[in-house]
Length: 77
Image 1 (cartoon, one colour):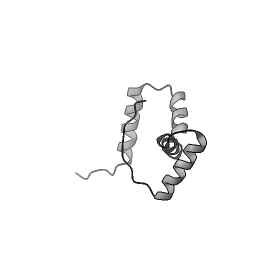
Image 2 (cartoon, rainbow, N blue to C red; image 1 turned 60 degrees about the vertical axis):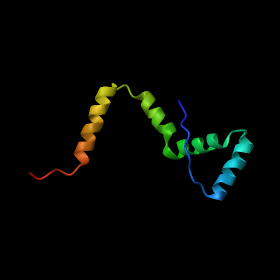
Image 3 (cartoon, rainbow, N blue to C red; image 1 turned 90 degrees about the vertical axis):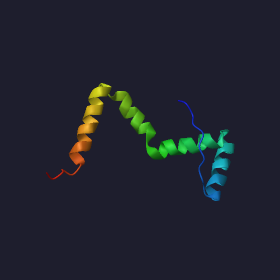
Image 4 (cartoon, helix red, strand yellow; image 1 turned 30 degrees about the vertical axis):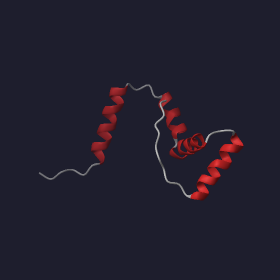
């Protein structure tokens, strides 16, 4: 997956612990931050679910649009 450079502002203590963990694991700071974000955002679970999904992309998109429309308040005419 391609990487994109970005800038984030972190608490000084958080960055300190990122650096400590990176050094202990032999990884770079950005790798530790990305791993933490992926874990916190539930990427592993999503990837497992997506890998088991046999629904074609166009059908999945239609289902997502229908679900989104069903949760929106109806307009008054």
